[in-house]
Image (cartoon, rainbow, N blue to C red):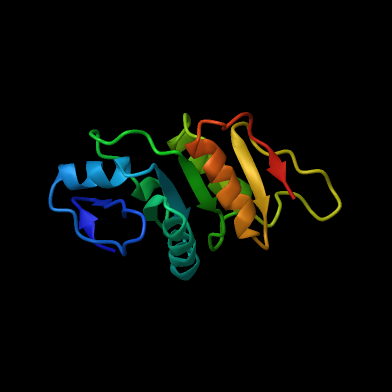
Length: 159
């Protein structure tokens, strides 16, 4: 992925990631129709999710880890953080907690296997919405559409 300084450039909807030469290019990409921060260690999964989001009109700023993302000051806040918390050697709950600390004021949607063993109730961390794997794209896209239209409401735990 091309980068602007140390930050990946948000990709405008319908386009492959391109190099942004100025902060203005990043800002205009982010303002296009809202954008999503996408975090996931697995590059193939991250690229697939980015393609899905872009195909449905969302800009994407993606990275492997939360600490790899830093928003340029000139861009408006993103709609939310979409997180695939699979990371080698790190529990999903720890990855989610790290992203929550890094982006405390943004809605966070975690695509998870579940934070508890099968058959036990899972209580998501505060400010985190869980979408269970295998991911049903329409659930993610529906939730993002609600956020884009200002109908965010409270966060929920989806099976």
